[in-house]
Length: 115
Image (cartoon, rainbow, N blue to C red):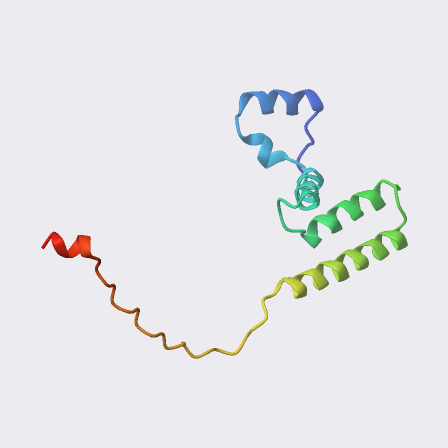
C-alpha cells in the first residue's frame, strides 16, 4: 500500500502543482458541491451524490445505517417521480393545416401616382 501524505505535504503539493487540487479533491466534497447546486436549481439531482453523503454520515456516526437507507429510498423515489413528471408527453402528429394565401395588397392612390 502507498504511504499516506501528511497535511503539510499535501499543502505544499497543492501550492506547487496548479490544478492538482481538483484531482485530489474528496468525493465527499464533490458530492456536497453537486448537492448545493441541485438544491439551488442550477444542476440536476444525482442520486450517487446523495449516496456518497449518506455513506460519509454513517461512517462518521452522524446518522444510523437504517436512517441512511430510509433517506436514500425517499430521495430515489422523489427523483424518479420528478424525472417522470419532466418527460414530455408524446402527442399524436397533427396534419399540417392548409393556410389560405394572403390576399394581394391593394395599392393606394399615392402609390399609383409614382408609376
